[in-house]
Image 1 (cartoon, helix red, strand yellow):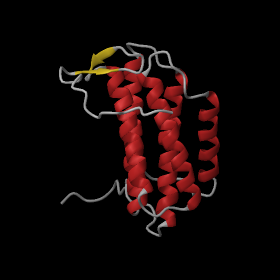
Image 2 (cartoon, helix red, strand yellow):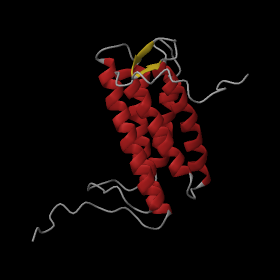
Image 3 (cartoon, one colour):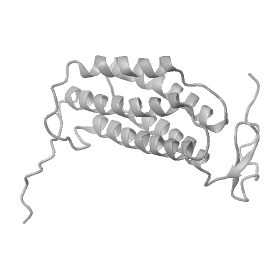
Length: 184
């Protein structure tokens, strides 16, 4: 593969537009740009999570997820392009089942805390949820493959489960929401 970026700035976006993967130009506030931009943000949040010590299996999984999110960003950036498959969604479901198997059943809501790694994972989860909302908004005005929406939905679920796993691995444990606390 040759050099893809010979110059970082192009000045072509100075008018508030940006190029899609198919060469067309849209406004930087376009629903498609919001969707793939938030997927990029979610990918960066996984990078922030990967910057702290993690169990080896979680680290390997997160790296795979980063590659898939890059693929998904490409799918959303190129109208009509397909990069996420039914198999990718099924793999997320298998990972969900695997990591959730040893966790106790939740009887209360948990707060997005539980140690540094768990908190970073919760932040990534919420960004993925926003990416899902952006992709759904895009699907209301332009074509989005159902696999992309399913992938984002399962990924946020997986990150929730991983946050629970990481809270336990860190020894912090989960922080339960105290719904009956006093308001003095």
